[in-house]
Image (cartoon, rainbow, N blue to C red; front, side, top):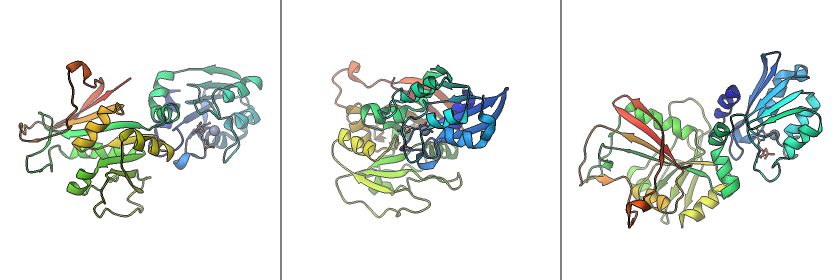
Length: 325
Ligand code: AOF
Ligand code: ZN
């Protein structure tokens, strides 16, 4: 299952609107098939692993990070494909919350006489599939808020200078995080001030994330959609409404890179699931621009609080990860 989870990660930022699923087929202790959800969501992980295994899948054991689907989509259901291939045993990490599946995939396997184990390493699978779960169960994508700033949490000098507070290792790390999200989001002020590329550079040809600018005004000239830039969407209105609109477009994982007003409105609306902070060893003082605008908190107890899940040194900077459970 650890191998299947690692394969599933290859689909993050790539598989949407579908969840990024991984699948490993084993026979007599040897891996005979490996699969992960392909760009745009098809083929599914199981179809790819079964194709590799071929006739050897008969009698084999299948590890999969999400319940195999039971619905006839653009291709036959994975549960049916596993049954036809004659596998002996399926181990799945979690139930698929999609109402078209919701336990029916597991039931099909059991009824066909396949030995089924559910819930292996479920916590890790849920963490990996969080964007898909949020989309299906809450009708909005998962949102990661990124902030790169000084020791004192400032993102620019009073005059707006921000290049470069953090170093090249941190910047490359940001591109890696863009890569594993479906969409990158900024506010209109940041789009006008920085003209950010909002694309992934330095990782070869990739499925570029969609670019979202939250603004009620016209946008500055940003590059058109091409091989190096994802689709450009301007959204406006209340955070809950544009997040619902993104879910309707199939987006499961959003990476918000500021600015301060957008970050504050998302936090006030309780829509931030994860934080990623890059901190550099310099001080910009009270005159520097704050990373997050006014939260209008009346008491410390109202402050949105997150749990530390990891940290790492990146050259001269550090990156720290937090999340809400
Ligand atoms: C699987 N294996 O690798 C994935 C699954 O639009 P469709 O027909 O491709 O179906 C999308 C749904 O299939 C999605 O909402 C989720 O329930 C499931 N995703 N299932 O068996 C996979 N990605
Ligand atoms: Zn499937």
